[in-house]
Image 1: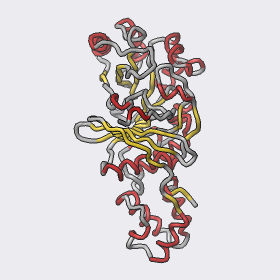
Image 2: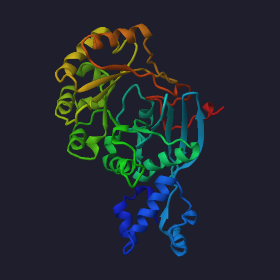
Image 3: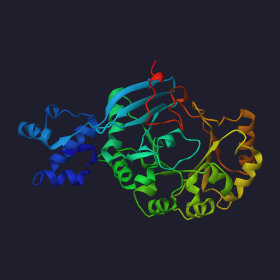
Image 4: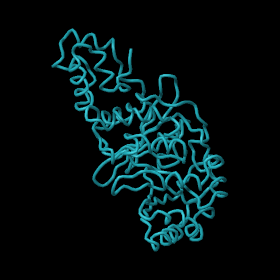
Length: 344
């Protein structure tokens, strides 16, 4: 039996052989009407409806619990092999954003990220990624306008599964989301960024890159990945990255008190950005504190002072106060370890 959420239109049409239009009808029911009961797909022959249940399965994730805050809902799912992943629905002023996971755990090992504590257990399959969107949509009635691959895992370390999931998310026969509303966040895997730059589908999505330090030494201390993906080499790959008119690469910078948050650090970062004026925008993310961490969030005056250095040099800069902190659903807080004390 095939996982429906892993299939492209071309793959489905092959299954229907002489009646490929049946695949289009099926896709319309699932991705436009969010209908997964074959018996309710009224324009399909009765015999085919009975046959479909032996051809395709939809659900592979079991919802364990939801944690709700005013600005977000976190969903804890269990996979078929008993592992746990998290997705977060974020409420914005005029839309919702869904943060999806691409791996169970993460192998990158960033010191400030809770996900790294569990290591990498495995990659998620395309259907497990798409299903996060489908389950949240059906459970809440919210059709998230934006999807960010900023949940558990390093998306570019699971390139093919993320690519296929993104294809289903943006295709007109799929969920038909705008490519401009899909963001891929990476810790800076240079080879995969180059691969993405040569991929017509992937390079049309938003690229967000975690920088978090203005020099190689400090970045290596925070992000071991910098041992092989150095800051200089990373920026060179970003300088070469093709962008359509009006698009920018998002540089993500987590501000940690007393570590990387001084105006001096901002001044040190500037040459990297100003080498290609207009190519980057900077998201400053005040560190989201979590139990057991020695890192602290900087006071507001230091956050603003850091921002002022960048904006005074005409660098587009935004302070991103992560939502969902109360339920450990904010940037850097997602883990595959289930914490029942949060469920109340």
